[in-house]
Length: 75
Image (cartoon, rainbow, N blue to C red; front, side, top):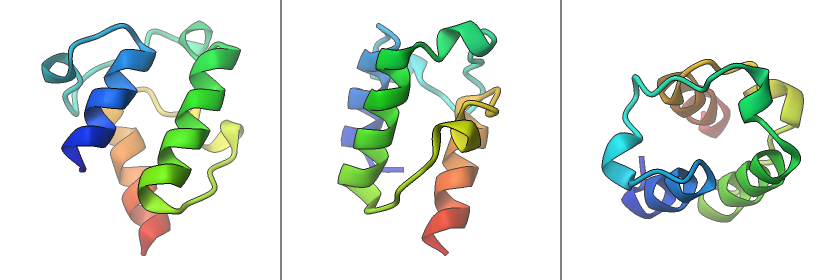
């Protein structure tokens, strides 16, 4: 995963990039507020040229699951 993506994504959750590991757990659906959803869609599009739908990634319970989703979409 692109280190710059990880750094910017970690900022969405007010974390340091070192804290955003594959095991990082998103704390329930409430962690996916509207800002986090819009930011994630924009970041994934910017870094990977993939259009994710909110319902695809808000089901992810860990950062590792999000990474897998992006990698699966990249083909």
